[in-house]
Amino acid sequence: MKGKEKVNTVEVNNLAKSFGEVKAVRDVTFTVGKGEIFGLLGPNGAGKTTTIRILLDLFKADAGTVAVLGGPMTEEKKHRIGYMPEERGLYQDVPLMRCLVYLATLKGLSPAEARQGLDTYLERFDLADHTQKKVGELSKGMQQKAQIILTILHKPELVIIDEPFAALDPINTRLVKDVIRELRDEGTTILMSTHQMHQVEELCDRIVLIDEGVDVLYGTLTAIRERFSGHAIVVQADGDLPDLSGVLRADRTNHEVKLLLEEKTDPQSVLRELLAHGLSLSKFEIAVPTLDEIFIKVVQEGVD
Image 1 (spheres, helix red, strand yellow):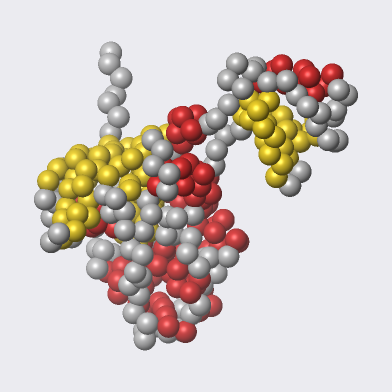
Image 2: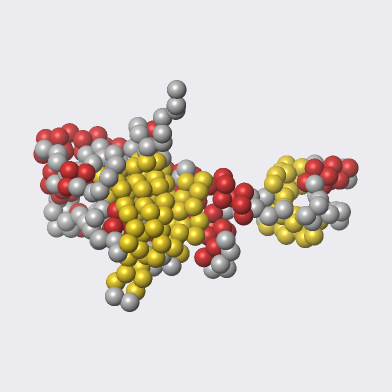
């Protein structure tokens, strides 16, 4: 018996879109599987927002194909999607509860359903005492949390969220990450765009990096890190490191030392040599580049 084929919530193939002489998207291809957290990354002006707007049928592509929730976008499907754009859309001169209830009804909820769902989320997001304040009187962080609540209130199958952690303090950032993981565990697909690479590393299963309208990096974080990892190790010891055979360079950062090895050097031979010198090691691991470092290599240095 054949195993089930993997279901993709989003499929983008060879997407292209121009505005006059400006080629916002040249050639972008990726898929987002059902129930995964997927990172859509790139520098400002790379084509991320244009790609998202094509997904949502706000723009028409010049070339390529898009499938969302099994096919072309329809009005019915829009109620199955939660979208939080970078430009926030809350009415500033309206009390928070009234604003959220009204906007929730546009996603197909009745006012009673909206209020019932909001009560739970507003309590969890520490906004329950602020429901009668006008939205414009709330801090940026509070407005951000309200926008996130509105995005997920109608229990969408696909959540597309742009810069979810903007204006959030560490406590609320952790809260939002917990909510994103819970949604993923319930089968919701999350397409997340952010410049905060450490959040991507914590949350995302796979990523696509777009630069100048082209996908230049695509795959799992593990595979991408392995692809860009140099022949190096990171060491933390209780004393100064001696000169070691097979080491090209030693770079010290705070309490750690990154050792760049010759191609033929086995990391285990370096470990044995360090221990032979009587050093006590609190850290010895293969150096893996951060997503920030990979982003810079690909976008600024053109490495692929």
